[in-house]
Length: 293
Image (cartoon, rainbow, N blue to C red; front, side, top):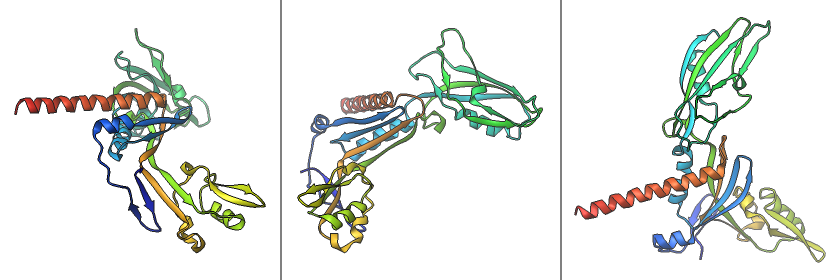
């Protein structure tokens, strides 16, 4: 029997059977299925693991995959209304599309802009110039990100250096906007027809419950449980009491990863490599401890 939680009106009840699995048994039963990938957004299912493993993957995606970001900012002229500290912070948050596996040193940029017109000018990331050095690849700076506004005769002269680091040092090095998971919903219903079926359908998120023709009536069926947000709206209606079961599988995680610029599949692979490296380090420490005792 799969592990799951039953959702009641105001409580979550653990109704799974006690199970004991070795680490090797868990590893043999792990499944990772990619559900959809749209540009920089990836949705995948991680099945057969404990919550601690899923959370480790999430935290590594956020905090431990190295990326490049602007760290050192040298401001030679700033006559805009923004203080130097604000400018440095905004520049550091501009995503840079460069592979973190490269070992080619730091990257240098400059921003030189003077408003010679009579109108207010918006300075964006498009105005940043990449100073390429020998052996360094072409990199792309995210486009159309506003940095500051310049009134007539105001100017910015800035030099910047981007270096590699990880998100636990500062959020500007985090490669993801979102890395989150939720448990797969379980929805079981008795037979509902026509008006009751329509009312039941409205209690769930769009697409979760479908109405199918059965004879002269329409019957409610569960078609897409993963779309449900588990609002428990159905428990407000007496006619559905004890006729609808809501639960969540506690070993089936629906992950959503939204990357800034890097391929999200690359990020997931990199996170799994980091987990393996950490486990190898732990095994080595334990082996060394055993040998010394």
